Image (cartoon, rainbow, N blue to C red):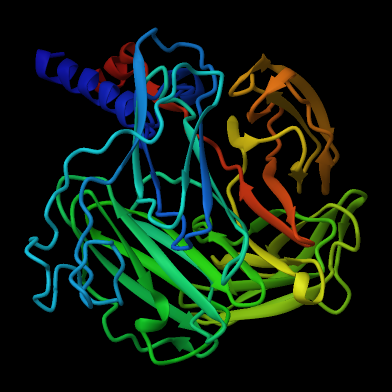
Length: 520
């Protein structure tokens, strides 16, 4: 083999370890075992994006960063969460507060009070700088002017890095507890459950971490198909900036239960939807997992008073789904909601009522006949009358090898684990506290077809907040979500974050195996 081929193999392996976005698979060969031909290496660099948390002057936001200790990492590395250095101009006012009315960014009315629109700001002080893996780092802001944050982690801080953004809003539209696990940049996002109705104010926050502008298309799909949008195509998000776009400005149609599709045609973005209701509070809607024939929505609170399922079929074929609830005793079919027919290109919604009936539960959607990809999410209400609060749970990917949720306190945190197919064993570790304490672990067995709200381990001598890390010990898929609760003036505030695999490692082919393959 010549030197060029060897260099190519080494370069490819190094790229996979750095980005964490690629999984390299060896070509099939007689007698080759792909599981033995690849090594799992820790990623060496990752990034996370946190949208601007709130416009309310009463809002209080906390950020919690956590990296689990990962074998195979070196002693060096760093992580930092800092404000975006540039905010694009508001087309309506010329102010650089990052808010848009859905029009392409960069346009102004000429009133910029002497400042150039989109002008870069001086590098801001980091909002949060973790000191070491294994213990959370905490930062906080007060008021409604907190910017979007761009985070990067390298070396020992990169594998499994997670950041939780949690905001308490005591009054006004969207009041309650709003939470979001800051997300990695990507090129496509699905959000079933958004709204352009009068009672809702939904913003999609688009954050660009890169040095060049990103171009994005935004599409909305309702019960009759695609909604006509005025300025949804070719929107530009400048480098190192964040754009909150009000969905109701994209179309003249006012509908609940829409599906939002964000397709980045150039560059990468972080995307999340902030859904604010005049009477039912508000929360963040994270992107649902990729379209697939089977979807799992884990961790519906046992005291949910109303659950609304929203699904969309993005392909050319209709989908017929079986609806099941994974309860503590096994899979059951909600009475009157045995199946769901989803027409191609259309969004459907169905009220499931208090489907959990006082017990932990997760929704499992499976095809009744042929496999047709769908996306799905639920909107959950807790409380009654004027004291109701809402949150969203998107369908999610399995925990996989490992996943973490930061921002937990000694009280008010609930971890739900679901094993829809086969029994599974799960190890849950409560990290050291942000202000002190010792990590503890506990192992749980989740029976097939069930959901269990587990009794959480709490760090010994806990001070501050802590993180939960979930590791699967068996091959059976496990789905998980974490709920935070906080009651304010009788309103049961809550927020739910799902726990997909943290992608802390990447599969890299072993050089000697690949040399043998290329020589054949």
